[in-house]
Picture 1 (cartoon, helix red, strand yellow):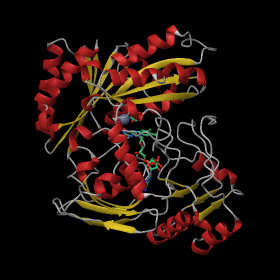
Picture 2 (tube, helix red, strand yellow; picture 1 turned 135 degrees about the horizontal axis):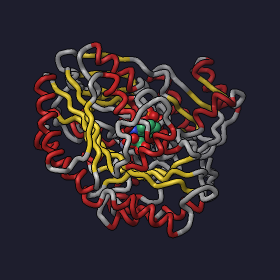
Picture 3 (cartoon, helix red, strand yellow; picture 1 turned 90 degrees about the vertical axis):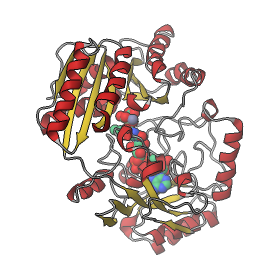
Picture 4 (cartoon, rainbow, N blue to C red; picture 1 turned 180 degrees about the vertical axis):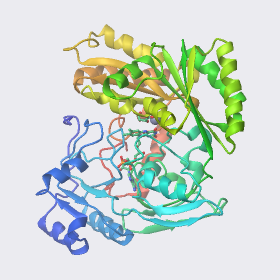
Length: 485
Ligand code: FAD
Ligand code: MLT
Ligand code: ZN
């Protein structure tokens, strides 16, 4: 894990005293409070998913009620104690863990469904509800959560809202800025702002909830979410295709939008390097193709009538093969095959870091330029002499992602984290993205990793407005310090 020589602990934040602990103990049960003598338990909360960032917090608070969240924040605000809000700790930019000794406020125990309306499909839940549990609850009522991602078994509904996660089906269901209808948020001063609306339409002034969607724990703690969920499709199909070049990926995407139209629900791409790493990491799963191909695409359709969808998909596949755009392809014949095909996409993040670590760049670029960044990164790593067999630190730069949304995941798989690799990639990657008018964070946020790089995508006046808002909501700066603001 990384040490942080470039950042200093800000002395304006109070160091925890025994009086502080006594206060927290007075409002929380034993289960809701973890302290330094519970080192193993603290480890999970201090270290991020990539094992790249690690803090030294000695106190984790896991309140079971919104009132307790409010009491905690008010106390911390009055006493200038820094706080890191934490969901499932699956964030990928170092935003969910402390940098120094900040108190961790975990939403783990605020995890209940509050209400579901089977007519409108509106779900109201606590922020700490695990995404997969929310989706399973909805499945029982014939609905689906309008967002899906590889971390669903651990990440929270509140966490995905706090990061404005995009995921695998944004193409179909749009961003959380559209589907979230209301939030309950606790401000640093302890005020509980509740707008848990169940209304599709509400034009009464500023849409305040939007500010908290994607705010990465910097201006308030989300405790409740109201979200519009769509009916669960009755039929799913997944097809896995092999292609010779990235131009073909784009052409197949255009064709999929036209020919599959309303039943297209995911369009993901993977390069051969990403599949190589996944093959090495995963046991007991056969890759759909024996031969290697430079690019693969996973297409999911979902709709209400299996025969209709099958016929559409079949006609589409015949046509892309006939046009020479696709050189090989398979279609899942049952649920197991469908899940297995998805694994070749969803297990890439885990596989990419299995060799020791991973540098992640989550980029929006115009589609035509999307893959050129992976090529440029590999060239650069080769040039500076750090790519290759051990003891060279870099295994490979790989590319995959939500090509349907113009979102590339450039991952640089390494044997260990090192300054040398980081300096070869940063700001190189950000300069490349900025030169093509892209975004340095498509969906993961800025967190700690990209705190110095916001200027590559946002302008000076925009950054000033962001700082003004931060100061307005969190004048003492207690929420998630040292991160991107
Ligand atoms: P955490 O990691 O705990 O926190 C993330 C940030 O939100 C932190 O800044 C934290 O302070 C803040 N936060 C968390 N909860 C709250 C709250 N209740 N109130 C205020 N602030 C809060 N992301 C995508 O966009 N698309 C993907 O496809 C995708 N796939 C992933 C696959 C894997 C295997 C992994 C590990 C991650 C993936 N992610 C993806 C990253 C994504 O950001 C997280 O999975 C998810 O959005 C974070 O949820 P979490 O509950 O774990 O939040
Ligand atoms: C994904 O799409 O798999 C995620 O955003 C995680 C990642 O980028 O590795
Ligand atoms: Zn992603």
